[in-house]
Amino acid sequence: MIAKKGYGRAFLQRGSPRIFDQLESKVPYPKGQEVPRTGLRSGSKSPAWQRKEGKSKSGGLNRKGIASYRRANPGSKLSMAVTTKPSKLKKGSKAANRRKSFCARMSGMKKRLTSAKTARDPNSRINKSLRKWNC
Image 1 (cartoon, rainbow, N blue to C red):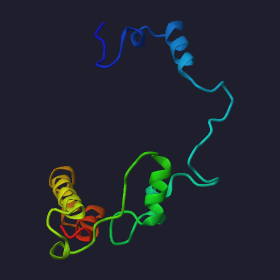
Image 2: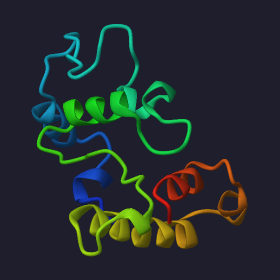
Image 3: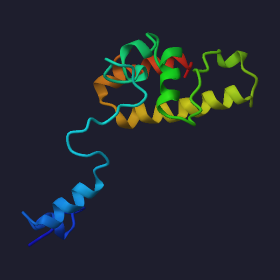
Image 4: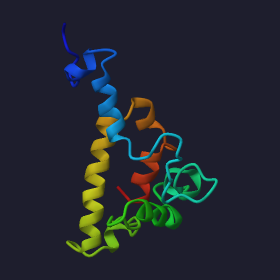
């Protein structure tokens, strides 16, 4: 019998009680008990940074989206976009370096990780974001 990559022998022994014992031991909540959802308001499905209300129309996240991301990911250092024109930034300043790094990283993503259609679309999230950062 050939094992699938990433799966151990226990996976192949169908009906083996050993598999189910392993699965049950890793479940943090008893059966029937509801899993608490942290970082979300009641009634909402996902944090604001993943929904339209946390995204800026001009690209990237707005203040609400950034605040939501920080709550969902404690210890993150996500901050607002550097929207200052490159000519107005002092060369080598923290903001200028941040902008330069972002532009290099996102331009590479646009080139390699998006479809040709998305790369050409002026209203795609990646193109809006690159425009906002003056890339």
